[in-house]
Length: 273
Image 1 (cartoon, rainbow, N blue to C red):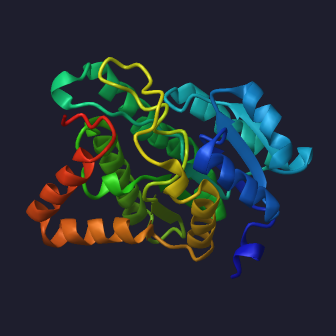
Image 2: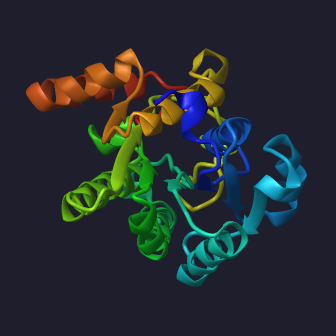
């Protein structure tokens, strides 16, 4: 089925929908005729962005901290109450970090696991009965760091590996039930995730170490996500560098470790320095 037709009248929940890939995806799904449930912690911001996603009867902003099981349950209940069911759950909400593990306050890793991993688990748990009923799809927006670890991002890599393992297992458990499970791994994408990344003491980094203008746009990333969903793929890995990294890690893990070290060492204000 064509992407332009696939999303019409489908009910799609997008977490982390107030910026970056989440917002770009919500806007794209809305433009393709979907009913979009936008979830994020900032309800006021969601309400201000909702008109850019679609008509008021097609968009539902919901305040949700995905690290809260109760918030995730309420999110799913709101989607079902307003739109009658769920066809697609996009687990996009996420948090990053940048610090050497030896310098890290362990609460930083706890926070990343709560948002990235448990956020995915919480939302998926409560959405699953409705997704099984609709033979729908659940997506985890991970990262190349879910396949090949990034130094100075221990909590980020660990949480993304965990999401991939969780979703791969869910796919097998429901192999005969018509459930689609997509692990979606963008490469470096322009967003505010690096600005909001936590440092060793848990404070926000504030500035990105990368040239964001040279990275894939969130809008382009959303197009790849929509295509992967429409084709009901189980895995999408983006960018030539991302694909090469995953391939190299599988075949030449020690060499990949060395190359990754050198790549991260070149970052502005690299933690290695």
